[in-house]
Length: 124
Ligand SMILES: [Zn+2]
Image (cartoon, rainbow, N blue to C red; front, side):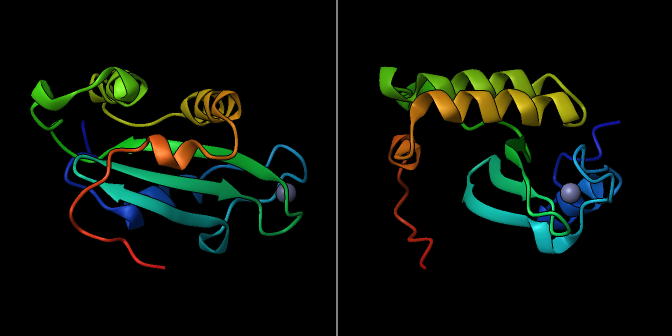
């Protein structure tokens, strides 16, 4: 149905609020869902349980058509790969989040620097 396409962070929150923490079995709440970064075509969100505090992981969610791939660099290959993987799916899945978590673990704590930088500052 593609209801996430053209969707928003709010749609992602609503999606995860239908999911349950695998540690304490409480549903996730909007408090535990944090927007880490917004890029053209993707949102990066961190999901955790606000009841027991356990993290679920980081999800990369496609929000629309992927930008033209002509400025893709080797260093950004994972982003392209993830975007392509997500672009073929109508919705994100629980497994996607776990996959992404594994992936970010592999990158290490400074993974954010691998994200493409845009002219727009996201601010802190
Ligand atoms: Zn929990």
